[in-house]
Length: 461
Image (cartoon, helix red, strand yellow):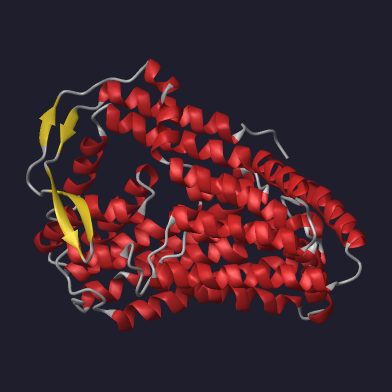
């Protein structure tokens, strides 16, 4: 495979490109106001208030952008460190590997069934309550499992991360994207549920079929995987762990129960108690600590395991900071709103179907700069709603265009901290993930444009 730039080199290059753009684009800004959506107060743009402002060309700021990015996403970065340390403590118990060995025996000859079962579950979580950051740690479980089943690490990360991302895009309830977008667009929250469930089912079924076909090919010939050389090393590590955990003990069982209870509490916490990064990080830390104690590890061993896990995951944490630095440069340069305004203006006065498509591509493009679904909804829907009225399409359709444009590319854009963080946890180089994932993204574009046809023709409301 040809040598490609390191992900940090790619990120810094994008920071430079963003800085260069601040020298050529005019400065601009919208007025903003605080608006309450449910129990959350969001900052939204005021339509019609865009005006030119002085730009602030960025130069030496490219060196401080990653630092500002670190501070901006400090909660996610610390979360990555905590999760890395916690899972290393859990992994040292040998319970995960022992559990995988047991599953391999139980599902021998039927390994393929794990793909539709697990992916449907995670896609549902993404569609129902917006699982995103919460899916990151599962890469540490499913990648070794996929390798043990004879697949590759790409299949492993698809079981949770890809599935949750697809559910996030085709959401029918997601409070972080759908409900906020509908509220800001002046649409009744959770309306249009029937068609949205159909959308979720179709995109989930398609993605599962895609992964199953790929997994079957890799099972027959592992060398067809672009991760083959790196996965070979992982397989050696797994074989060594399997040798060390040849017997399933009560301590393994107790540690797995701790893991299962942790997952249950994570789901309940997100749905019932609105837990987010801090609470989830504390939960994973407690889970790793308790599992380590149950397995018989002493304080010193637990501390060493935690530090080793943090070291192993440090690259994932730091690359998130570089990704956030791109947005920092655009905002500090005063051109973020200029980009938003230019894209939004392109949808006015177009034929209905074309207007819906342009709104979709607008959201698709904005997603590169603003990966956060809720932030993007707060910034763009106050513009997209009125623009939908001018174009003769319903605001419900504009919300769907936002959803589809927001969700799918989150799984491939380098500005998404969740994406680069998950890939680092899975030990998958970004460039290899991009090469594997971009044909799927092309398919998602075709599917998204097709799913927008009926809402436009039926004047879906």
